[in-house]
Length: 114
Length: 111
Image (cartoon, rainbow over all chains, first blue to last red; front, top):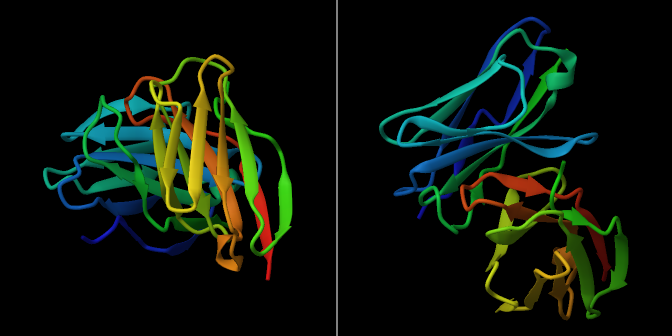
């Protein structure tokens, strides 16, 4: 079974631009969560999608948004990029929501904002 | 506030030795998961332990959970150079896939 696939792996953007990251979950998994990892703040939860609906949201500004498609693939978008948005963005795939299931992560997208 | 906080350790051990890491958290949980990360890459899922479980094994890994003390430990037996990585614990308070991660433990296994 293929794992969680995130694209692109690396991205360099300029302040003020916007960016879209993509995540394809493990086949059959319907829950996709997004996390931001920085040296200073560590791993922080952004949001979770299940059945094309956002179920949970972390404490991030509205510039961070996401969506999920009917095939469970998910995208996250960051608008008006700031230098502080430079981070490793990780996507996690789970079988379902609301239960004790493992979350499996992709390799991440490393975003650098210059 | 952040749940799932490992003891801020940087372990350096010889190959073949055991490595133990601890994690404490602040509120009640549904489950606790341990992950490994190599050099800023993706997280590899190691083990999930539910709140009603006390101990779990997977290969060379042994995880314990003490909900009365709100703590967990990860033991890696007979360590290998390939075990060199950062190890994170993450708590799921509501069983809704919203994981709260600790800062991570850096483990270096010297061949």
